[in-house]
Image 1 (cartoon, rainbow, N blue to C red):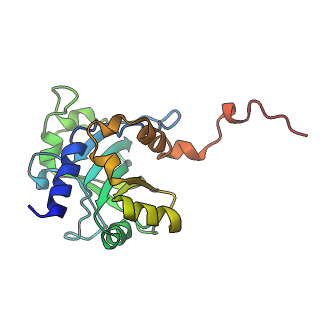
Image 2: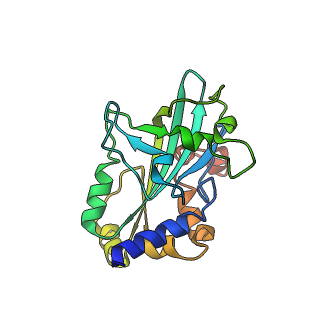
Length: 217
């Protein structure tokens, strides 16, 4: 097996052990969260969620790891996205970053019917039954705009060092060495949890405890 294919399979193998909610991810104050791991899975890829641009049927974005927080109301459903991309080269990083560059055009998250009808790993209900925004059994995919997006990129150590030294990340981007992603029980790493705790909108807001001890002039 070629080296890049072996690395790709190892990454997916490790990500399959990650929980339904991204490990260490900060919680939004007062927000209702309903996270699902959309990718990777052992089932055929057409059964699992993906990202796309509005009106574009073929150019799909399929990250190595994809977690979805489905929220909002029946009439205004949205999806928060946490994606993981393992990059074997700097060229691969450039390509994958281009798919998540902020723009005025929203990405759409698509959840196929077969994925919605599958049993939830958390209990014996079907996934759609655990989504408050769905009131009846689906016959078409759930398609919702992406409200918030965070992406974790994993790089081999040489490329990680170069990126850390020279790149100014976008606010939605986070970087780790590849070893942090491929390590056994890597999702339990305190260092990874510390990084992931900042990968949410909550990190942009001041909490009372942050300035409780401050004495102004």
